[in-house]
Length: 327
Image (spheres, rainbow, N blue to C red):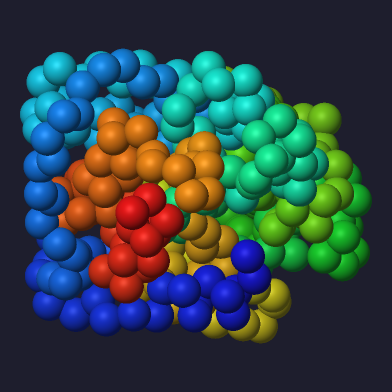
């Protein structure tokens, strides 16, 4: 999704009801007051499985816990090893939910469609501002995407003339000027890895020096303990020991903070939706457990969980569009 599409999809009424959000951004996050309260349905029980994104792992866990309060006889198993694991799990039928921090690739959709005769159904569940995190002691005021590309990529497809290997190369002076930059990222199964590679590196190759971590929390923890580090992760994993650097699309542009307002407007250049994919056969009733879980996610209660986990809630208008896909 490009910035214009993201802005169109999220520029909906978000005034009123304010909820605090911890360390994820500079001010309070607004929960759309038009989001509907979840209404409990009858006849919902059984087991389900979720396989996919590490970025959404905590969210899926919290949603499952919230759902169980409504339906004590429901159990949902959560596995979060990376977005790339979601499509095969949905296709094989071993999972009913496929959380992903990127959209499915056409090849993944094609494999699913070849088996079922229809494409998987994409549900937008939350908004993320993918953060470029530095240690809390790092005073760098901002970075451009050209600089981030030159820090992480061999190819420098955004046109930066030379590799950025020290903090001095990124414009810092004093004690920071000669300090090598430690690089932390995700592995290729990660949707965040894929999103970052596409939208920051323009599909260029990562530098060999990037230390791949098994999950988002590990990236943030590494940056928190390494004073000269930089890493990327969903904003929901932010802690008080790291800082998300304001980003500019290109040199000379106004740097934008990784907060809700800039994510909704699309002015923060690494804004994205977080998705859950399901198998919905056209013209056939959806399994009640799957239907109600999606309904709960898109409700006021489900989006309050989004805020508590450090991400940004979808507007009621987006929730209404997603609910039409399961009703």
